[in-house]
Image (tube, rainbow, N blue to C red; front, top):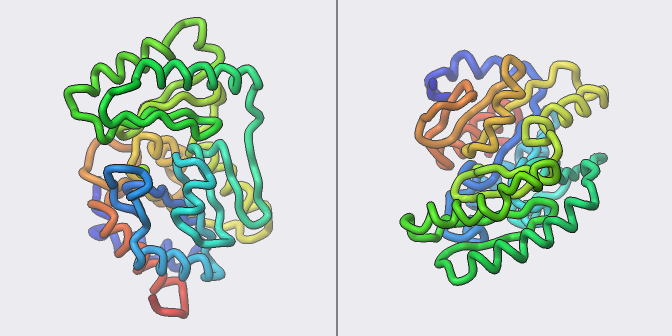
Length: 268
Ligand SMILES: [Mg+2]
């Protein structure tokens, strides 16, 4: 994977001449990973840059997170931009509101799974069972690594039953396992949906999507934007569908600063 900055001479003209739909993951992309989700706050300078981008006429900004919508909105705290929570299961922004229809059988089942997971994982150090509605997450970032196989086994035992297959979907993120509604929906689908919405809103036919993310769930977005935009993986290079990489949240901040300089008359 090429470092985005090494390919800058190729990327810069694309950013300059097109309207941009900039989609950013939150945890590990904008905010450094922290022991608990509440501690993963947005660096002040990054917020400043996001504000500048939000005020730039040729830029639309969307934060695409696995967190619940209300949670990610509170963490970023910038009004009038698009927020997507729960990997695309919740979307809100100026003139935009979207929730895929979720079967009621799923909601009932989720309450039961939440209870069962909490019961069986009770007392296991560092495990957090979080019902983000409609997604249920089992976080284990703070667990001793020797416990992780056991946590995964309990999760599989409770959610992997063949009778549940039609009613739920399970996914694995970074130090998290999740139960999701049984819909073909993910960060990739929501990005294409947003892109189509922007293009049809007569904003600009030549909107270039830019997607930056660090997680396994961001791969859906990288795949969806193949040959359509600029995709950037954050972290130590691994196999990824993204075109470019950045080493961490500091380099993401530098990238945002460069976009602000290119697109805005106001300097960061
Ligand atoms: Mg992330």
